[in-house]
Length: 390
Image (cartoon, rainbow, N blue to C red):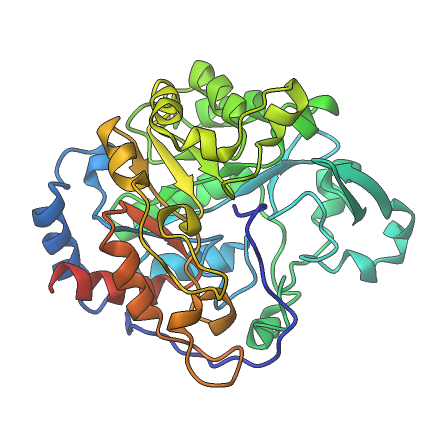
């Protein structure tokens, strides 16, 4: 997820810090069991199955544990579980030329694979309009699955996370089917249900190419028996009409992602719908979303805006407004490094040092959000433990 996030990169340095000790292959993290019980007691979760079985605030491993491994690899997903994430965002789903679904942050793969090092694919490089933005690189829709399997994943923001480049070249691009099989294996091996949270990327763009995502996702989920209301697979998209289409194809929990307040979902642009995200987060917009989805995934700035200096200001009414119509809120994205934190939670002069991320978590959790996407699940779990036991 996070195509429309304000991603900052290009600054060197990073301090590697795992905020929780990992205990064994089962993936238990110090304090997690107590945390989950405290969260359940406080928020009424647990025992009911489905979304209600998840502790709150729910800690969602953003593209796995992408603070420590190249994102959208089985290694990143595995580490997120080992660090104790409640859900793994296993899959930003994009199609191949032959119709398979694979997991990449974007259809453009020049920044997340070694494709540029493959001379046999040099002629595939092109410039295309991706949701109205001229984008140059290599695109999944121009490759067969067999061709993509010859590539290896690389760190997307090496300037911010040079330590992650240690793992460049070690992982294939996983398919959605492989992720679902991995999910089942992990569930059996750990003795507890593993949840995933895939996103459908650029649905309108791919539909125009004859590679509709929703039908493909529904077919794979049905094949694996994970298209039901209580299935541990939450589906998300930045395009409301994509979620509406999914609502007719599957019974899975559905979430509408929301970018900056002044932006318009690309499907709205294509269909001439004049509404912006600011309209969708008004009570009327939230009521409409609640008619076909179970939650929203807003950018954190929609929960607490920042001032011109990047400092947090006063929370909006979004949390209470969404809860009034029965919607969960899973905002994105918490990261430990200074450039990604609100200015008033940065520490020191090293731009990529870890800041006061626990203070930032505490401030966001206090708004009543139901969970959060994080690149550092271990840090999120410790922050939750602090919060629910405070």
